[in-house]
Length: 255
Image 1 (cartoon, rainbow, N blue to C red):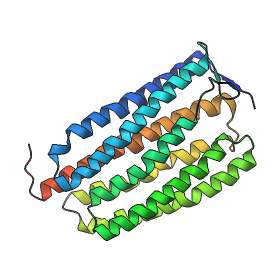
Image 2: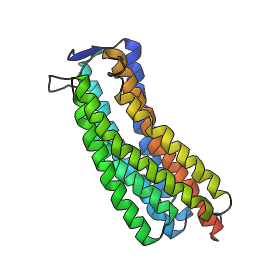
Image 3: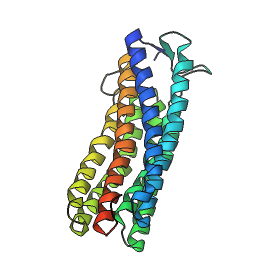
């Protein structure tokens, strides 16, 4: 496999702009969720704090990814992907995910306002599963051989499916306990969760599906960025909407 991918000017600008859009989306959502905390009841503010942390951490790593992409280009359109000090560093995404995915899960649990014992049990199980998912996925991401990618991909998929199953079940079980109007939003949150998280394994599988070289690089960076924006920003704003609706249902007056 080549140590560089030769992008066209259009492909280079596409990724450049996508990463820039990802960066500003994360920063904007961080500010919005921070200043919106007074608009929900105190018991739901933890979810917004966690949402702010998720997008802040992601924003920092998108800044690093953006700079890495620019440095790897060497002022041209060919991106060095391995074998050099200035090679594009895909590891930034995995450092981001191993920090933000557990926080996303805790954020979801926090907005449901479950009993402390149930919330603690869910948090422990899901955080461990998310660490296993990210940790097992990275060796496959950087592997050169497809057989190795498949092995680590399968191992990473086991906790991935476990997380989705638990969250889908818990979110579904909470629907009956939600105030009027909130259940529909929680239901959409489940679909958003599955839809956005599903992009990651698809992007991961590109080399195995025969999409390699430049095409794989372009579509992987595009897929990961779109999925991050949906899974962090849109998901966080949906969490905020649920917190606002539940706060209103519990007597908090609109500003």
